[in-house]
Figure 1 (cartoon, one colour):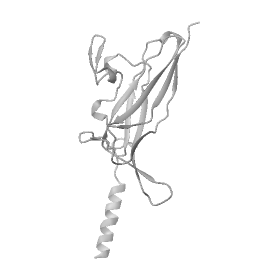
Figure 2 (tube, helix red, strand yellow):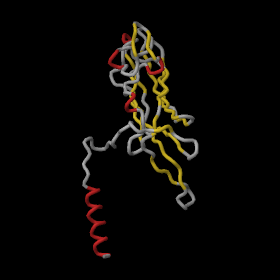
Figure 3 (tube, helix red, strand yellow):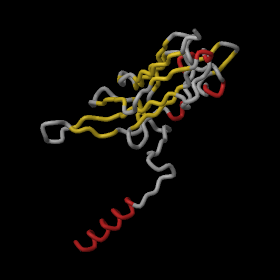
Length: 185
């Protein structure tokens, strides 16, 4: 009997290691059953990606920056690992809402989450968020990904785009991207 259990365990281990995802390096994302993060367990959302600075040419004020700003956050819960330092494990399927501030794109292709009526964006807080609402949750690895389309500030000035996630009363670190437009002089 023990030999049979060992053989089944070995087969399951081999099958588990042979999984080939459609997108290598990416975990599955399915927000259909995502839930709001609870205050009852020690959850955290920490920035995992790097932020960058962008310099726009002097004549590009108001133009959309060619590559959207990309931020990833890890949703994790602390647990007692029985050592001096507590452990953390990723938490999948946590519903989030991005909080974005700064100069963002007005173009319809960069605004799948808003209704545009002339110059009015409803809801305005989602302006420039390229990531569709259906993807606003942590994936099976606990990672939340968001992309934001930003624009160049006026000549000779600097602006910032800040991206933060929240789920209920749980707030993430803030990702800040700085954009400078060169002066024409």
